[in-house]
Structure formats: C-alpha cells, structure tokens
Image 1 (tube, helix red, strand yellow):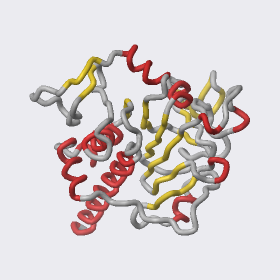
Image 2: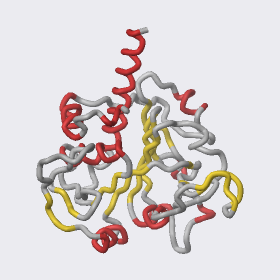
Image 3: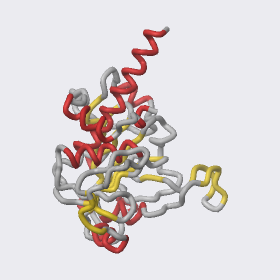
Image 4: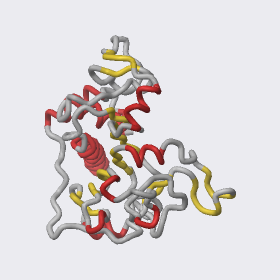
Length: 260
C-alpha cells in the first residue's frame, strides 16, 4: 500500500508539473503582452514562462504593479518585489481593448464551439440550479485578446454536449458571431486538462486533441467529453518538464502548493 501511494503521489506531481509547463509554453510566441493568470497553476505557469520561454511577458503582482521578476506564490516573502512600473486598472484596460493581453482561466463549462460559462448551471437564468460568478469580464476578455483554458478535471460536466447553460464568451459558433466578426477575429489558443492538451485547429476551428498526457488514451478523453473531438492520425505524448523547468517551478512554488 505504501508503494502504491508513493507511485500515485509521484504520478500526481508529474501530471501537475506537465500541465504547468504546457500552459507556460503557450506564451512562447506572444512577445510583450500582459499575461493574466487566474488561479494557482496558471500563476505558476505564467511565472515560469516569464523566466524561460518568453522573458518579454508583462505580469502584475495581482494588485497594481508590473513585476520585473515574478513573485513566489504562497505567503508573502520578506524580500522586496522587483517592481518595474505602476499598472492600475486604466492601464490594464488599455491592454485589454488593444488586444495586448493573454488570459488563462478555468471555466465551469466549455462547449464544442469553445464558448465558456462561469455564470450559472441548470434551470433558467433567473432561477438557476447553481448560481456562480456571473459573466464578470468574460465577454470582453474573449472578444478582445488571446484566451487559454485550464481544466483540472476533464469530464462531461465541464465539456458539455450542446451549448453551455449560459454563454459568457465568444466562440467559434457562426450563429452567435457579432455583426462584422469572423472566426479570424477570435483568438482562443488552447485547453489544458488533466488528460490532454487541446487546441482549436480542427475543421472550422473545432476543438482538436493535440497531445495526450502519459498513460492517457484517446478513448479516455472522448469518454469524458460531451461532444465530438477531432485529432490527427497519430497523437504525440505531451512533453514532460525538463530538469531546468522543474527547478524554476520549485523556485516559484517553494512550498509545493500546486500539489495540494
């Protein structure tokens, strides 16, 4: 039993670090953009990218300052953070409306068009079965700049058949395109889950499986998705972290919060 637990813990840690690295690599060609990572794993991933594959990334301290180097996650450290510039909300929105931002977030539902939901589940909108955040900034985020989704538990409750219970974001749905918009105006990049990495490179921008994590089959991914997926004839295995990446991740998350 002890050996089984050790093997499980090792596989869990490897999976979490693999997801972080896949998220980080998605920023490689962005250049100087404001990255907004929502959640612990996206925060670590953006910090990793800032220290490795895209050193031009701008990221804030989640309050009002741009950082020259990312803060470690967890309890605030005694060391002074390396502030580069002030970044109040007015400047944030300049980046948003100008398309100079890339956000990673975790929606509660995603449908076959890439439309996402963080508002409500089930029932009618004025009487939902579950009330969540509301649409918040999702409409403006999705229509103005690049978006990546990170999902910790790949299942049919998240990847729903039909449309989301409440459509909060733009997606590759021709019936919902704003006047004058085309698919070329939408910038949905990828979806990273605990099973695979997906993008929108299928026919008519359909969701496509790009790589499978170690030990995962395409059948497992399809069984846990409420709509039809596309994939290439041969699906590669998701790249696992290098030693250099693991060292950087450990410096960003010295307390190992990502594994909890």
